[in-house]
Image (tube, rainbow, N blue to C red; front, side):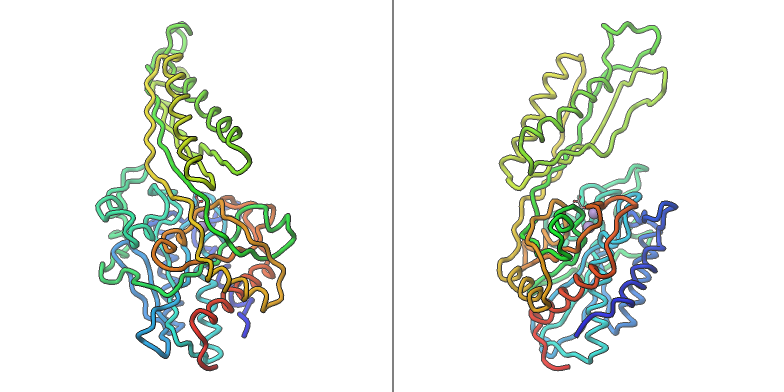
Length: 410
Ligand code: HGY
Ligand code: MN
Ligand code: MN
């Protein structure tokens, strides 16, 4: 049994039209009109595949293909349909649509599995509009409270809860994803490792640690022409020192450390006004939790020095941490057995990107399959993977799913 590559490519192409950007990428922010359109399209495809779709109170969409043993815990497949701004067409969508392709392939073959198979689309995996990331899967697995999630606001002050209602995907708490036998997520690697190794697919060891901080620098707005340099309390100059420090600290922590300042807001953001207030994000990542903590401690220490030198106040709020998470060894073995069964070269690797599979691993044996990314690029309009590599990954997902769900007949 093999997936239908042309059908999968057609579904990816159709989905990529929703939120399409002029540069060939996708902007489909969580709970936006584009996200609604993508959800509606997925719901139609799931129904056409004979699945019953349910939506929980965080907008997570779940569809089930029955197994021969209704009492058996399901094998859950999925990912997310939301994207970052000017992102790519594969991040998230590949995992959801490859899961759909697995079900379509089983339907074509009249295959019966003992365990039910579920497809999930998690809400707000990216955290691009509503921070932090992975609110849907985190809430469904008890990591975030409903009040916290519903109160998260975007840059225009619109809340998660209001937007969920507005797009018509505020479902039922009773329909939150329940226990699962195992969870599998197919995803693009989003980095350069598989391409450098010359292999199409990867078996993912786990996800490295991630922590997000919000830094606020309070200085004093003043006139650009009349205020002498020596008397300024320039929030932007102070912030610039700290931004450079994030990269310096990560370099000192070694080659596995990552630091990114991706969001930066200057107030009042006017040419002839000395900035009085600056706020920016810091995304630190490391395979070891202790080193992640140390990066944050060092940032605090550097902030104290900069504040004293520049005469500003600096606050740092560490508001989200996703601990380093190894995936289940047995699930990884199952994925690797599927890859070997298909005779594919592969590599095991850790994920520098966060995924909903992290929160699923907290409550059931989980694993991920990576597909090679061209140029190691992702979270940009140039994100690309070849149809051949995508088909390879989807066939591994199919083979691993059949092993976990136990093929009864076809
Ligand atoms: O931030 C991440 O690693 C993921 O793409 N949300
Ligand atoms: Mn993703
Ligand atoms: Mn992403």
